[in-house]
Image 1: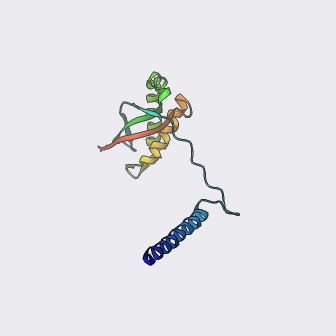
Image 2: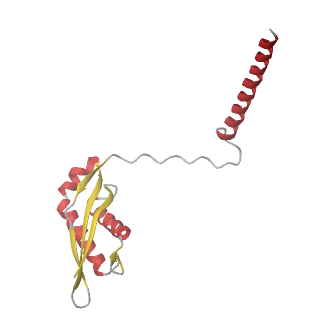
Image 3: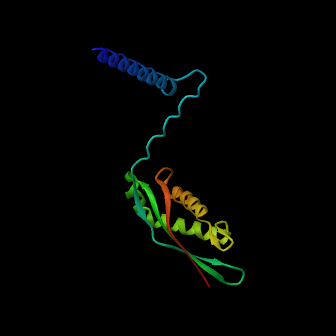
Length: 152
């Protein structure tokens, strides 16, 4: 009988301690405190996307006397699902704009670091160029799949 009473008292003490610890943790982590910055709200989720594959972009890098190398970039456009037919309808114009942008960037060497292509700069320029053709918010990203450089 004494063992049962002792076990009951120890059990109640343990449950009380666990409850107090849980209450303290709740107050520390879940209850807002004065002077504390409000929690950041999560950004809205990205809209569902699809991919539109483009033909390879081949551009010569012209030096002072001759063509020094050929740069080939294979890109795919990440597009909002609802706007895929629009992008496919404008695909020749988008391709022409991307090619013109890449020609200009290779010509003024703004995408070249030495003789190597700076991929983040190419991605940024091509994303802006695609947005000019089909509108802002339609092309979410330009995915660069392959970059090859062939020196001559």
